[in-house]
Image (cartoon, rainbow, N blue to C red; front, top):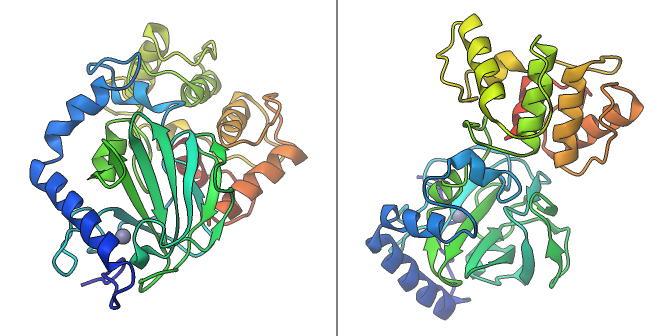
Length: 325
Ligand SMILES: [Zn+2]
């Protein structure tokens, strides 16, 4: 069994851990499914019927790229108490992003539980919190206001670990009241750890604008208004049919790879506009001019480096997957 995020051997922080543990167990016993409707209904201006992708843009994002290690799931037994978060494995130094906008309310070693090393807590309002543990470095100060997707820390191996990874927790109904981070983010259209996202009809935002630029490059000129409405959905369905895919209008793991283009310095066109759009989503600040020049090249390499991708300046499927995920 993988011992990542295992219980602390010593007595350090024991009292806090026990209190925390009791709360986690109570929430686990209550189950995770029943809470979802409440969470979605609790988001201002959104209804439970809103599609997952609609909830995503501008609200929540994947905090770190990586894999789920064996035994690192939420609720996995940890020497008498359930694992309070989800582990995401990658190398030390991998960027950790704020899963949503908020305020850094705790920052330091053992700020939530001693065994998860250096960590920080972000308050998102509405009694919702996220916790990031085992960090190697902080990128934001205590008390800082952070934007969704902001680089807040670097992945590390501090605390009780067998290797570098992010220990990520989601809390709702107050700090100490954990919920499954995978389903919490999934309900907001975000896949923890990465992977191609699913964009459903009705979605809106920067990723949809990128899709519209990509469709324009594929031969169906679409207005890049960021709204995945009737005209765009019809175009995507036609594109899916032409590629032998299920023409359901949902842009998911099968559609993305055939929609994106591998791009490098010197490329030009609407596909480059799409790339610049998603780079800007991650703070690149590029002009969306369709020309892959020095600035775009630098932005791609910087993003690749931060996300432990090969920093070769080639925006291929892996880089696209990270950018749109
Ligand atoms: Zn963990």
